[in-house]
Image 1 (cartoon, helix red, strand yellow):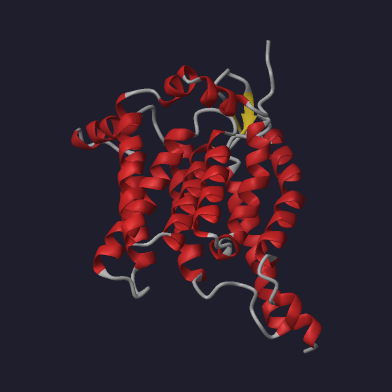
Image 2 (tube, one colour):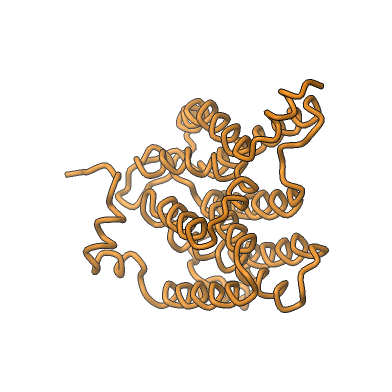
Length: 286
């Protein structure tokens, strides 16, 4: 194989670029198909929006991974990070769990609501999602050569981040903005783009479909919120030290507990800076 092809496959940003293009090419048609088949849900202002668009994020990521694998085979060198098994397993797994919640989930909300269902012996898709996410995190992070403390903290960060982004996804674009701000902070703080390139097959679709979510042309649903939270959690795990993971786990746990007993949306509305940031880019309605 030519040296040019090998150099092309070795471009660090290639996974992100391919994923962005795959998502941009597939999202408009997928949303039209959702709408045409009546796959809509009312958003916070009762407008019918195609959902769960998180399935499009997962689909576009799968397309990108296939194309990147093909490039690797042709060029004789994979553009994908060797840690791909970790990167792929958890986001796809929690997206499936979120899809189950989107399709058959009830009205129960929060840990207390789902715990009450379990104690009554009833089906709780939220409890299934939490237990499944924990199992996927425990399995996905095993065999990575992590110390026991680092391993436990990484699992905690993954599961907590997945749940937190589910709590955040109550307004159009809120989870996307939190994801972008987190990623920007991690890149600037660590001065390292490697985790971004590693997670590129998922980051690209999150950005594209998230933009549709911001403009109220799609709704991520639990499928998408889970996936965005999973990628955010992985970004933290791939970037932070053991001490950093301990701090992240504590902060995310605190936000989660706050969201369980108080309203995150009310908190955002009460702070002018947060309110402005939260509404930026969202359509203005009378």
